[in-house]
Length: 269
Image (cartoon, rainbow, N blue to C red):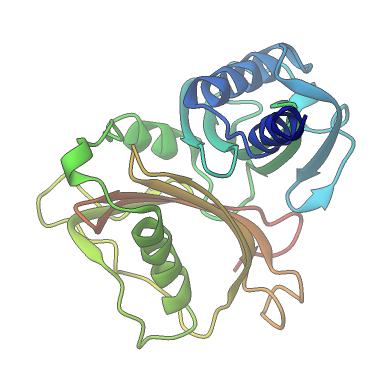
């Protein structure tokens, strides 16, 4: 009887502590892609009730960008098995309604359904927005699978992303800059495709990047951070700008950085 009870309890613990699989997360990002192209939530990955934010504000998911059927010209996703989370970058080059969209999704670790979607949407008028430049450079970069022998730990990936974010407010922070390294900011690119490309250019001072939310994929060496750029008491007000910074780390060094910030009607300059 004791053994039977223990077995039941053990099974319950196993269920509660079960982790997501990469396959589940890949299906979820595929359903997200299909939903964005159709303009409605489509697929088996979504929970009945989803917490949805757009540009750091709670929005009805049926009223946000996912309600628009968009032709996506560039799509890249990454999976965070430990957190049951994933990230997708969509580039829409439509000349009338161009978008660059960075979306984090989170799955409930019991049902394995998407229970939370947080998206940063940028378009004309947002910080350095130029969808032609964004598509051109993003489509030429390689964010491929990293050999297991060369992968960084989750802790090292997060530390690299945090160091980059921290240097905006503290110039004493040591950032693991790679060479080459290229930063895609809006549609502006710091690189030329050369071995000497650098990311450590044009970084302002006294700017806090706060309220960070991460998706880390150690197999692909990536970290996406959604946050408030210049938040607390910055020039854009207490909330700052809704922002996504996506990092690719190779050999422990930053290789690519994709940034997008939504001005939301504010002056970004």
